[in-house]
Image 1 (cartoon, rainbow over the protein chains, first blue to last red):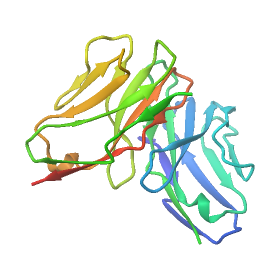
Image 2 (image 1 turned 90 degrees about the horizontal axis):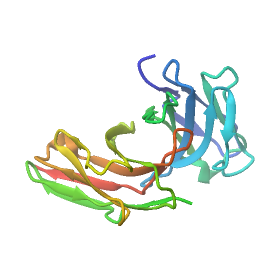
Image 3 (image 1 turned 180 degrees about the vertical axis):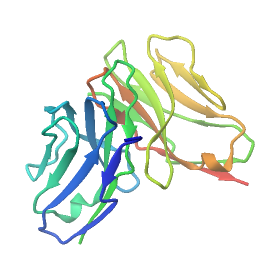
Image 4 (image 1 turned 60 degrees about the horizontal axis):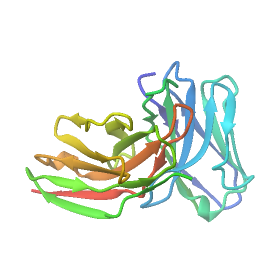
Length: 114
Length: 114
């Protein structure tokens, strides 16, 4: 596609529900990043994939957060048993993986946990 | 760990005037990349300008330029001839290599007054 696509754009969940957020990166981009952005804050790194391999998941805040990219393209961020503190915008970014590779961002999914 | 600090939560500028946004960072690396991203209400991060640490010459992109002071670990953004469309959140970001995530500051909200 022309850009990074994320869906849904908005998600409202009741506390305790599981949610799945989708990211469709730019075609051919090998690197994919997930970020969490709380209201009024800068994005915080969650996890990173190179192709299908998850190379860094040090930013995932708890074991309720899980990400996958099984075929090295589309990625899904899953949050189990959502809590109010999970409310944030979740941004996905992809890059070509070259040294100067700019990160291209999607418009994010705004998650509200009630 | 690398950190990025933006000390100005909010700034304002008159249309057609010049404004400078501040950013400092902390790293023990000698080679890295620095970026300024713009985030309008649509939430999509847009790259404004980037700088490689080994380049002494300050980067310039049309009305946007940086003042990169490597020894001081400072990377400020200057916006000349400010336009109403420049109003947004601006994030300074650091990256140490092609397989590493961006580390963001907390952002500066820029308002442009007509």
